[in-house]
Length: 306
Ligand SMILES: Cc1cc2nc3c(=O)[nH]c(=O)nc-3n(C[C@H](O)[C@H](O)[C@H](O)COP(=O)(O)O)c2cc1C
Image 1 (spheres, rainbow, N blue to C red):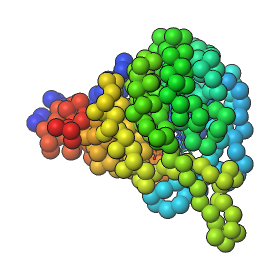
Image 2: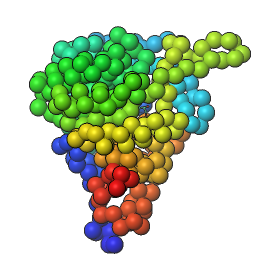
Image 3: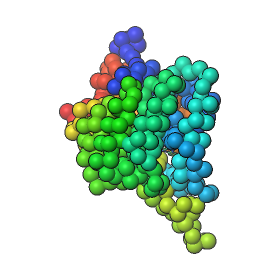
């Protein structure tokens, strides 16, 4: 197959990207210059750190603990400057790539208020963080209750005319039920998954490692959990799925596409491989597609179900 017959361009739920790789929310913080670096490194779109109505300091240190080369534990506690300060940081910046703004809140009204305030930045889409596992007052309890998920998505959908993605938690009894509620409320895509509830104890000091005692696990250790959820979602829901969880190389990304993801996000992988991970995954994906004579990413999406 000729290179000219081939494209990595991806469109999902109205979001147009040069390729299907996205920077996952939070891992690089809130700084616009870091988002630009991720895009220069090859990300087709970037997701900001989750922003809420009011400033949050986050949890006491330590907030991040690298367990090994497969797993990272974090309990950041959603630190962010609040939407007004966030706007100041982003206004006046020019971006040549799509930005998805990640929003959290403590009620449906708060989510839609934050999303409306962010409209001045011309978002390519909103990603609703319904799923932060360690911050009870904002996020985690919402993502565990399908009715709340419905109300949040519905509230944001009726406030903004921009694609809305619902980011789900794996820390629930039935992810499908939550996803179905989000889709029913009008979610344009589902993002799966956020981190998996976890903790670690330091045997020398005999205390939990994280300042917040427990947190969320990310990295390769959670990839099989994420792939299974994407696979199940693909069989049961009608909107595109964005897969995230443990992607560290092109094979991991392809696994998500085969399971049913239309695009993938990379988070903790940056910690181990640096921002070059985007270029490396793209190169591997390109070679894989040419070798298997796939002309576009759509042709791989869900192929493992056939
Ligand atoms: C340090 C850190 C901060 C994160 N912050 C956020 C956040 O603000 N909002 C959010 O939706 N997800 C956040 N996440 C979750 C990631 O976006 C992603 O869903 C998760 O880490 C799994 O992907 P990974 O294994 O590629 O990191 C964070 C993850 C990490 C490791």
